[in-house]
Length: 223
Image (cartoon, rainbow, N blue to C red; front, side, top):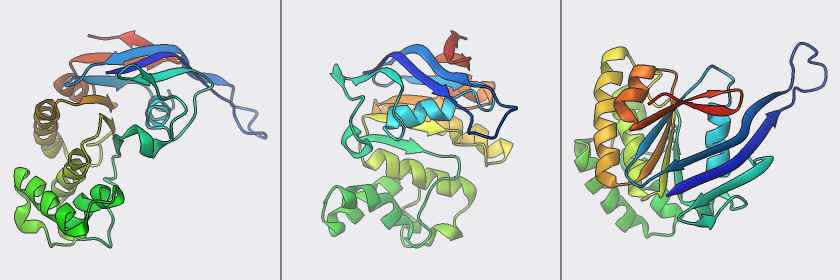
């Protein structure tokens, strides 16, 4: 279980920006996310949604507060020790690697032998209906296929927490609708905790069992 308590982060504008004022991105923010549960976070641009994900992933330190997982304080842990997966709206696939090697990448980084990692990657791609594209270049895939490859890579590494940052915003409306239903089911089947950041309330409600709006660094309950 993810347990955030008293998290604080203040944005300070750079020198020479007189029109910007300091503001809270997180202000005594607390949240829990159980295994198998998706929590959706909505908020205006610049409200701190992506910064919150970065703090959870260990990419950015909070000013105060704690991030715990399964009862252990991980606030100071580096990203690689947390075993969380962060998916961005631009898929973040490696153009120089084919599909199977993109999916196998996290396992290879964990020192799984490359042959075994590729076998596991192809098996995971089969669950997404993409086994026949394993040797294809990722640049040959459609946007929806690329996003499925990104999710397959995230799930193959068996993350303890999945962080989704506007994962479908680059896709057309029909494809967004199909993928958000598919992703919600696959995340639930995997039994992992998930935090979804999105500007789309319909998407947030379709995927999240609980929903909040981030305003002035604090969470307002939506459902």
